[in-house]
Length: 430
Image (cartoon, rainbow, N blue to C red; front, side, top):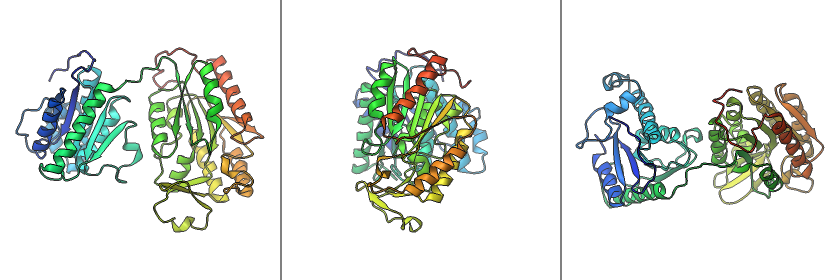
C-alpha cells in the first residue's frame, strides 16, 4: 500500500468505501458500481477480521491492522469480536485520515449493522469538518448512538432491508447514499476561514437574544461569529471544533445541554460539555444561559420525578420543565467543577436578574426563589482560575453584551485572544 498525494480538485471525486467484505460483498460492490456510474472513483477498504472478500480491495484488512500498529493475526487473538473490531476501527480511522491528508480521498461512505456503524463513527470523527461523511446503518438515528460519537457533519440513512443480501429496497437506499456522498464531494466547500472564528452557543431569539447585538460588534473587530444551537448536537459541534483549536475564542452563553445531561435528558451533547475549549487552552467567556430549563422529548411522557415541575411544550419535538432550586444549586457546583479544570483564560459573567427570556416576572418560568438560589450558589462555585463578573442585569439586556465586549476587548489588547489574522494553532499549549 502506497499513499501518494493527488490534486485535491474533485472533478472525479474519490470516495472511500468501508465495509466488511467477507459478509457484505454484494452490497459493497453495488455501492461501488453506483459510485462509478456517478462518475466518481470508489476506493474499497475491507475491515473484515475473519473471511476474505470475493474481490481485491484497494486497502486490505492487513493494511487496516497495520495502520493500527498491529498484525491481523494479533487482532484475531483478541478475546472477543468487540475488541477485534475496536482495533480495526483504530486502524481504519488512521488510514482514512492519512488518505485524506495525502489528497487521496474526497469523502467516505461506510455501511453496516451495529458493528460496522461502531467502526464507521470512529472514522467519521477522525476526518476533518467539511469532508463528506455518510454512514448507511441499520441503527441510523437510534438512541444507541451517543452524541459524543457523532461527527459534527455526519450524514446517515437507515439501511432499510439491508440486514442480509440485496433487494429492491436495499438497492434504493444504497443508490441514494452513493449519490449523496458523490454529490457532497463535488459541491462541498472545505472550511478555510479568512478571519479568525469565534464560537458562540445560544438558543432561539425568543429565549436568548445577545447574539443579535454581539454579531455586528464581533465582526467590527475582525472576527467571524459562528453560532451553535444548543439542542443537543449543536453543543457537540462547538466542543469538537474547540477541541481542535478552531476558534480564537469561545463565548459559551447557553449551557442548557450541560444541565440536560446532568438531569439525564436525551437532549445532551455528551458528558464533556464545557470542557474542550479549556482543555485546548482556547480563551472562553461563559454565562449560564437557560440552565434552569431541562429539555425533554415532547412526544414522550414527562418522567415521574419531574412531573411536578412547570412544563412548556415548545413544539411537537421538544418541551421543557424548570429545575428546582436545589437542582439549580447542584448545577452551579457542576459548572464550577468543570471550569476549575480549564487550562486557558476563562471569565464567567453572571447576570443576576435572569438567564433566559421566560424566567422574568410575568413569564411562564418565573421563579424568583430558584433563580436567587442559583445566583448565590454560582457566586461561590466559580473557581479562582476564572474571572467572575457579576452584573445587575438580565442576560438579554444590553448590559450583558457590553460586559462581554469589555472582557473580549481587554483580552485582544493583552494578546490573550489572537487578532484578525490566523496564525498556526498553539498545539494545545497555553
